[in-house]
Amino acid sequence: MKVAFTSAVVLAAAATSSVQAFWDNGHQMVGEIASQLLDPKDLATINSLLQDWEEAYPNTAEV
Image: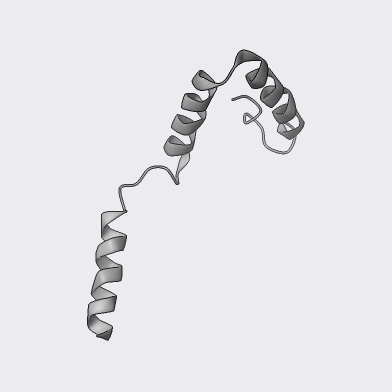
């Protein structure tokens, strides 16, 4: 039983190794899709809120 569980975990980890949503490219794609779907007024509000992050996190203050 322990071997079967370990095998299942290893297979699951191997199957998800190509998932990009958890890395930079995935986050950028999600942000771009969201910015295209948002109302311009809402996008402007989000960008103004993100301006507060510019000092602590350079180049991240724009959706």
